[in-house]
Length: 248
Image (tube, rainbow, N blue to C red; front, side, top):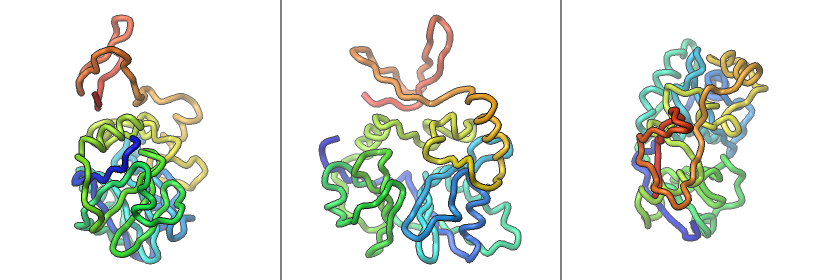
């Protein structure tokens, strides 16, 4: 990935969260620290069931008067249903936005967008664009929502880049059958020191007393044919897993 790429991501969406209780409410509903974030800061987090299985995954960016949640479009209905069912007297509103989403990554991405140095997960709102830095994909990678620069590469280019970087996609590599740790999200989306949330006991128990029963991992095939998505993998004659995403 030694070339600057701009890719439109119609499979991605942004949800705006408003209301005076937005930080407290979202903090109490997800796996990561949200309440202590200040404008310009962001974090990845999952919403899980009482059994610890993921109901949704998002990248939250805190702004002055709202939050913006970057997530997969196919996950929006289930994610909002999981959050909104617990709104009682809370002043919080979730609104899916129509802004197009794209990713800019590769050398020169920061210069193209004229950005200051941003830590991973942090971002800003400027000239109608919501921008968050995503170092998981690339050292210089930014997800943007709004009228940004014109695409220069296909969605397949982004898909190959995220697979090479080990970044899972909702509905393809992970979904409601997995614990967040099984999807490799523990280092970036789970805080073990924050307050209570639904499913926390299961997440904490796995951390303290056992290990995830399965794990999403990256495999490289040197000189061998790359298996197709959905193919079963075997080891010593026993089934070892299934291939969710591939990149030739």
